[in-house]
Image (cartoon, rainbow, N blue to C red; front, side, top):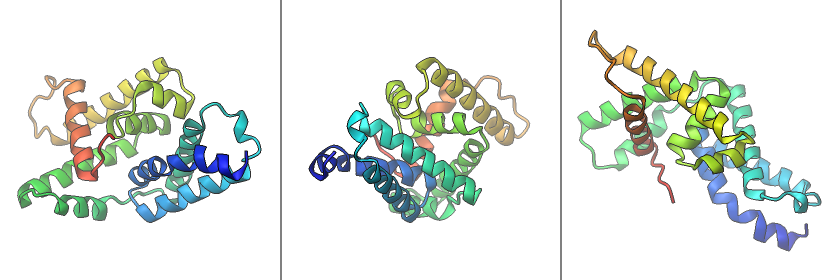
Length: 196
């Protein structure tokens, strides 16, 4: 692949990769470093990129893997500063800001305790709002495996969240889908993620 092809086929996905990495890492500077590393590796592999059918999915997979490396290296992904910054930008009263921030922090903390595969699938589907097909391309998983892992991840997060927040009240009536919609909405709102 020559430089011109690289510029037209690979560089256009940079914003999507940066958005994905920023949301994944909760740190824009670290995300920029990850995306820069990915583009450097792609440039170094430019001679073999012509063989790759879907360069965007390949780049997303590389970005995801590099983000997971960074997360493993750091072990803790702080979200408080970023959450506070996003909440202040919105016109939400102070009580709502605190409530959203606490809820998002709880949900994100629970998501971070999931096994890597479940965490990734939940992140891509519920937060990034990617289709099952897009997730399959980015992760090399079959759609059925994505659905199973997503279902298990949602159930774990929902059950733990409800256990933490039940205050002795019964929580059996809350359905996974209800929780997914509410949790996804809270995290998207706090993190400012919107589907293009």
